[in-house]
Each structure stands twice: as structure tokens, then as C-alpha cells.
Length: 188
Image (tube, rainbow, N blue to C red; front, side):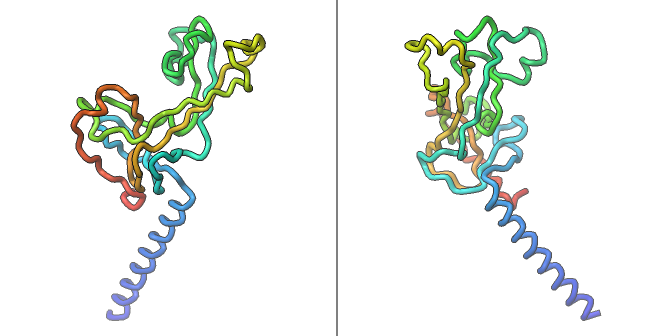
């Protein structure tokens, strides 16, 4: 019986070590993970798995947004794309929608006074990439689909387990807030 108990303790220690090593290896390869958001009833949130210094980009490459210039109204496209004004595309067509894929478009953003439990941690930044042509000076710019990348820059030092939230520079950034729960990879 002593050998069985000793073996069980040894196996538990090995399992714990393997699990910890697996978590550390997965974390080293992954910049983000999904977990329950710190915003009540917001579903999943995007959390950093690495340290990100203030002023540094949150992700290694920008998300790409491509416009659907004249989207049909009252269709499913509205549930999978962004409104034109969200990405400054009001002039692109009669009813443009922005089809954006990537990390930044997944960040939660709500008024901190009413819903959120923390001030937002990142600021969205638009990177226009119209093949190098400016719409106000290049006659051929209209022939090129308007697309660009969205990126985010950390507004403060972020530690692993910090939820990434967007800051929109509105009045609510000065509201009182609570510290959000930290969702470390080990928490999962």
C-alpha cells in the first residue's frame, strides 16, 4: 500500500510538471488567449499571454480590413462586418461595410462608467494601405479597393492575463474603475 501511495504521489507530481511545462510552452508560442471577459455579460475577451510594454504594438502585424462597397441591406452581411463610419469609409459607396479579420476587431470596448470593470488598455490605430496612392491627389486611387490594417498600441505596461480593451478617447476614460480580474494561462 505504501508503494501504491508513493507511486500515486510521484505520478501526480509528474503530471503537474508536465502540465506546467505544456502551459509554458503553449504560452511561449501564443500572444493571446480567449477567456471570460472582465466586462459583465460581454462573453469572451482577448487576453495577453505575454508582457507588452507601454507604447509597443499589441500584435506583430496589422489586421486587414477590406470594404464591401455596396452591401445589400437587411442581409446577414451586417452581422459579420462593421459599419462604414467605424473605419472612416462613408465615401466608399452607397452602403459600405468593413470586413475586418484579425485580433484588434475582437477586443471588447464599452463605457467604463456603465458596463466595464476596467479602463481600456489599448488604442486602435489605422494604417491606410491604398497601394501608396492618396485619394485626394492620385486620379487612379479610386480604382483600388480601399483597405487598410488596424493595429493597437499598449497604453500602459501589460502583463500576462491582462484583457485587451479598446480606448476610443471619449469622456469615459476618466471615469472611476475597478481593477479587472487577471486571467492567466494557468487560470484556464
